Amino acid sequence: MKTALLLEDYAPMRELIGDVMRHAFKGIEVTEVETVQQARALLETRTFNLALVDLGLPDGSGTEVIEFLSGHHPQTYTVVATMFDDDHNLFAALRAGAKGYLLKEEPAPRLIALIKGIVQGNPPLSAGIARRILAHFSSPPAERQLPCLLSPRERDVLRLISQGLQRKEISRELGISLHTTCDYIKEVYRKLNVSSRAEAASKALAFNL
Image (cartoon, rainbow, N blue to C red):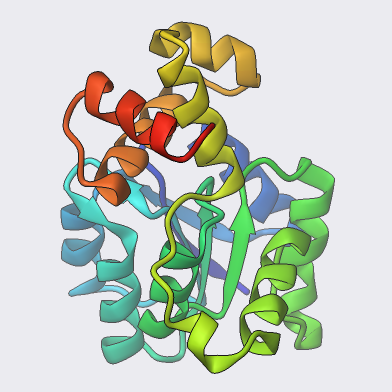
């Protein structure tokens, strides 16, 4: 692994993931971009051995970049690095061509170990993600077709919204950054097809959260 593309819009996380890749592969050249548009423009002229792609981006979804890489640069080993741990995002990314799926909440040493495993032929999967994949394919076919709603973390966010907590308060309560909290709230709204806190709270009551 000599060259890597890192697509991440949140600067502190971009620095962390960049350091993880540099520790995993000594001397690797990491090129950082922040948006889908920047990534697509770069990939028109460059190829990379490795790509770590976030999903929730300011101008779209990282799955668009994964699909482009799969179609135009199949030799690139593409891995998701995200905070989304739900089936919807997981399987959309895998269908798009991702070969690994890492959760940003993993400790840095664990992320380094998982990424280093690529050269031994081990797909980099966070433990919780591996369990989700196994549960999905071990469930009856009818259950797999049921619409996936919220991940455990998203349910936590919805519960706190229903209790009247604001974004900064939710961030402190769950021990996550404000940026990550905002991403979770957007994902909850999208999945529940709501556009306000009142609507989200109503859904929480319906779910008895």
